[in-house]
Amino acid sequence: MKFDILRDHLLNGLNDVIKAVSSKTTIPILTGIKIDVTHEGIRLTGSDADITVQTFIPAEQDNQQIINITETGSIVVQARMFNEIVRKLPTNEVEIHVTEGLQTHIRSGKSEFHLIGSDASEYPLLPELLEDQKFTIPADLLKSIIRETVFAVATSESRPVLTGVNWQIKNETLICTATDSHRLARRKIQLENLPRVEHSVVIPGKSLNELNKVLEDSTNAVEIVITSQQVLFKTGDVLFFSRLLEGNYPDTSRLIPEEYQTNVTVNGKALLQAIDRASLVARGDRNNVVRFEILDQQTIEISSNSPEIGKVQEEISVEALEGENLKISFSAKYMMEALKAIDGQDVIIQFTGTMRPFILRSIHDDAILQLILPVRTY
Image (cartoon, rainbow, N blue to C red; front, top):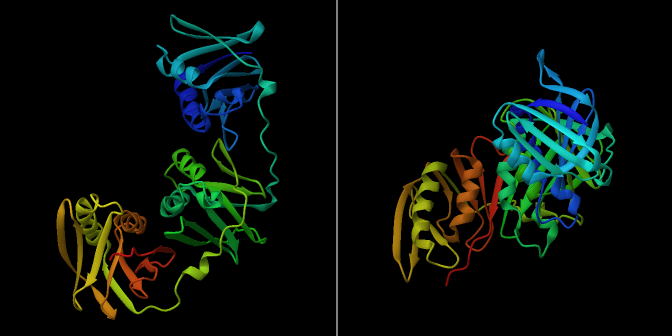
């Protein structure tokens, strides 16, 4: 195998696939990146068995020759080392040549490295996915969906299925839900090109966070193919595979109250900043608890009290208020993350009592819903 390539194109490809490589893997060959060279171009593959990222670098792009291929072939090279070497090479022209015994020679300018490669035939094959159930989402919308839900997944492995986001397809609607059993984030999107077959799968939160780094902030379509065990996201020359989590996701729809005693409309940004300030004192407390109290028809008070540090109170004017006055306590962290997901818009907060879950939505758009369980304070 032998080819010359422009270093910046090789680096762009490596930046995507290195995200899938983990040093903690129990399968030694997965600490490497697989390089497949054909006359059309080069495929780079990185994987940790849960996530696999593959990217293609074409030999020619926009009438510019990116790769000169002398001899085709495949090799697996140590991922971190190869990435560091390419990053630090002295010129933009790189020659890679694999000789007998999987010896991999990397030349650039007057610099030359010799790496010992591994046999590419030992590298796991990518899953074959039938593409009859595919649909598309613009990349920027997909990034928003991830941002609005993935923060609410569980971090503890006691219920593995809750460490992922549930993607449900039904009636031309995609419903993405995440919960760690103390809070819930849900995003609904109406899409015309969804499969007719109903699906309910759980995508690991870790996979979605890595996918978010690979996606560009553009309106380019991302193709999504869901099967019973894998999901594939296809964008430009990058393929991103993730395994799905096993187990039944709980039915979260019954957690969302049908009626509310109190509705408060308030500026989301002002509320977020007030809770952020109150959490400075709350941080000294184990639960990071902030209190929310309706004082009258125009005002709410955000406060926090820590025996070791002191206390803070701040009044905020509300834009509308219906229903009964109430006091409620909640985790500052959960509330701030929910408000950030709604992204500084005016929010309506709907309460059904001091010890019942409450809901946050944007007043402009009920596609995003956040639910938080209050904290008991005695």
